[in-house]
Length: 483
Image (cartoon, rainbow, N blue to C red):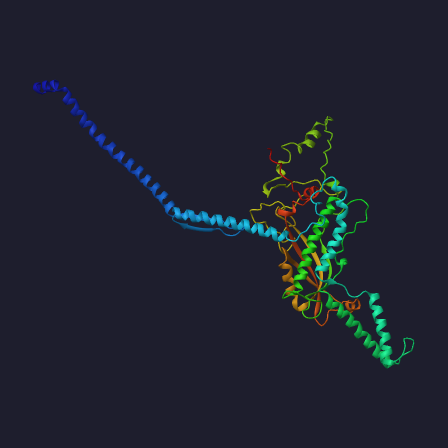
């Protein structure tokens, strides 16, 4: 053993290295196996990530948003490339241009022909003009309606006194030519019968002649226009009420004229062609403002401090002044904006005798989303006010040709943005109508009551609203940018 030990001693480094190799080799082999598994797992993960990226690029979900809120989007899975991205950009630009053009067209249709009764009065005249223009609006309001009737070919039967004069003259001539007697001579029963028949025929002829001169029976009284006898000028709420009522009635008369125009020719009550709407009995737009509302009642009133239980009044001061602070009333602000106007949702200062009622729940809805319909108000589901438009109802009483009722309804549906949302027939006494001179010829006629909704876009109406009207509708202009 001595020679072996001596050799180990003389070659100790070699012996140690061999021992280390024998011990370490299994551990190295084990570690190498573990490292390979980890590396393989990492590589597999990287390959999977790249595969997902490639899949997303090669099969992307392309979404084209709809033009109208609530309409379905166009969605398609396809491979992306530079050409496709360019086409997608073109589609988006085309949709944007179409939307802009459509918006401009809609506003123009709604605004077309809506003249101001007194140019320069709305929304507010200058201080010098305030002494003149407000006094002119009511007269312009009446004259504008007279012009509406004239343009529509409206008229009335002969006045009773004129009718009586013509019949007296006819009777005198008939006695002289048929019986050779004067008005003081008594007639026989046969002669009286013949005279009565002739007088009836003459009366109908006069009525028929008048009916052929008019497109529709109507006069200024069908509108029941508000009178103004005060010596003082009407306030700004009346300005808007009269101006807006004129616009509404102008659209109503345009629809009547459309119904009574056949192949470009204006029809008459009777004759060829004959009018579909024979008589306009009444036109009644709903009121815009509550009764007795005044400008003064719309002005914000300062909060009165209340005594605290401790007697110091500090609690009342804190609570009363909170709404005027930058933090006050923040929960009453809508996040959305309608055009260039920010719209508050909380209660605004109000009607005569107290605060105004809170605005409609849908009055300031997001214009980028469909408005939730409310069918408890109307079959259309429209709300009276939204951030985009105001809706005003009109009740009409008409006498129409029963065979062409569809033509009448179409005339309203195709004039501006009006919709017939209510319809019912009303009993009609033709003998009573004829006694008043309303002669409708041989056409079968019925009397109908229509309820029509008219829409008014705020894109243009808000620019003409006087400040108190904006306050009533909850429209607040944003502060002007500095600089």
